[in-house]
Image (cartoon, rainbow, N blue to C red; front, side):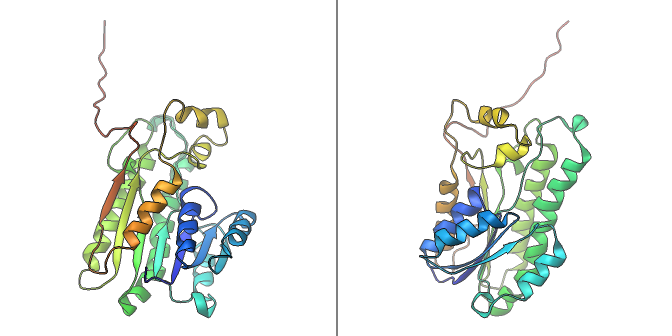
Length: 255
């Protein structure tokens, strides 16, 4: 792998942490972004035998702080080659008419606005150097609707289209962009966050099946990044064997 420096958002747990661990094994210097300083500190300690890490502990939606931090990186981290947009969340599984507006707004702010803002900050330098790769962590929810996904699914559809439109704009450059779209992923905080700390509800999601795990997605990301320079992987959809994209919901009213 020719990349030297990578930014990973949502790096403190789940998919982001797994990707950071995989990149560290490749010797890539890492800029780790997440809210929880304690977890970032532990991750930095874990990875320091393989690579150097720079930690940015802040809310990904804090545009002023993110901008200041990325503009004042230490020299050895200043030229970012890879951006892994992993920070994201789902909140609630209620039908649209029963949701809380704040949950919708939070998902839009993190899954769409924060992702595009950090991309907007880092992309110009990649284009100027004609070198770099952006990987967005989308979701199959952006393609296949399911009850309760409403705004979450819409945000991931946005991520898919944003990725493809970036590729259109990057035509003529060597900068690559990819959307990785996993379905159900266990061993992460995704469902715990979705159900606002209700562990029983979160555990029930994966009861009786074997979902994808963060390492599956990190292996995919490393494969994407390791392709020859002339190869761009536009999008990858991943599902556990216990899931399928097919299925048409029908409601029949009976007298």
